[in-house]
Length: 287
Image 1 (cartoon, rainbow, N blue to C red):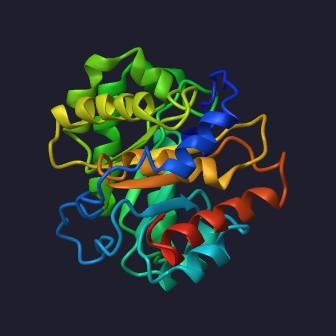
Image 2: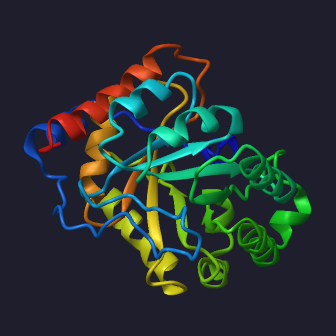
């Protein structure tokens, strides 16, 4: 998971006044017509997908700090990604109907996750390959993005799971010609929006997300797309700001994933912000 969320390299601007305007006016709200967050089912009987109870459902990482939140809202299926097979073994059996994912930043780790999932009899639907340019992904893998994606697909097939790709935003912005062959091999795609969050919630952010979604769907019109909206690393996590970004794109993507650059900096504030997001979306559906 760390390879998926640790790609914040953009400079945010101050826009408290603009944010307040969007929160109060609803200028950012897209239509609630997103398709269901369920993908094409594979042959394996364990491949349950989230039901379409809520347009643009929520997703987040499975950690000790978020497990209770996920279980509290288990009747609202979304996506949960676990870097730890041990924690997944405890929580995943309790949330059938969710898109349950084991993540890894490299091909060897991806295979290891699949093996652990099998050995521990963990119920889950997808393996996520977080192809990045960071230290956690071997250089030869991101130098051959298409070949690495094909190998990731082979690993998923080996374990009877679907492939979710979560490549780094900067890596894809420098290799836009790779979208078509990579998405053609994938059932799911998570893309990072933090480089677009330099703009406040509004039309420009929405247009940037729409442009990326269009690129992703060129190679696979049926692919299920999750947008990762990330809490920035140098300011306190702001649930209302996160929700404002989500409202801009509820009709553009199939789900919104809560990303965090770091868990260590803000302590309890981060899980509290995540819980607030779940409360606002599911306890107050107008959000």
